[in-house]
Image (cartoon, rainbow, N blue to C red):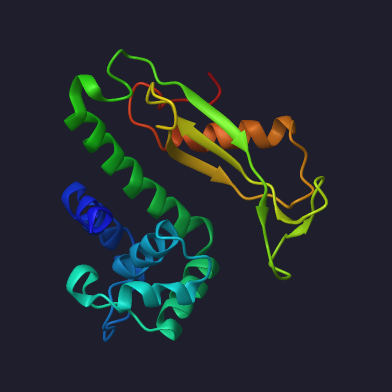
Length: 200
């Protein structure tokens, strides 16, 4: 309930719906923005596949109408086919809402002192099947080795994820080009003062 209400109060639901509105078919029953947010909520609740939106579907009083598994799958396929265009629209909507929330936080916001600290960390994510780019890892497991950028909120365990770069399980820990890409993605997803030319 807390996650669903946070999405509503920050306006993230409206922003994502507007960002994906151009891809909505005229007679579509389910809003693509809400469906994508339902997938995100399912992941936040511990889900690890698209079918886990069924957890939300079981609680319509909390999450409202939730699309069927085939509808969710079609949306993800559509977004994947749109590639960078869809990602740019989603990232822009998230950045706008983050700017609003940080502004509302005032002196409690992560940018209150005019600086933003971003930590980049790699973590192994296990895959239990032959998922795209899943490979053997240096720890003798199988999966992915993404880099994730977190804005430091000044308290242990309070980092705010702002960007992630999915990489194969055998990707190196100190690959400079991947760190640069992740840093640029983080800058684009942060409000002032950390937006601007990624070359600076």
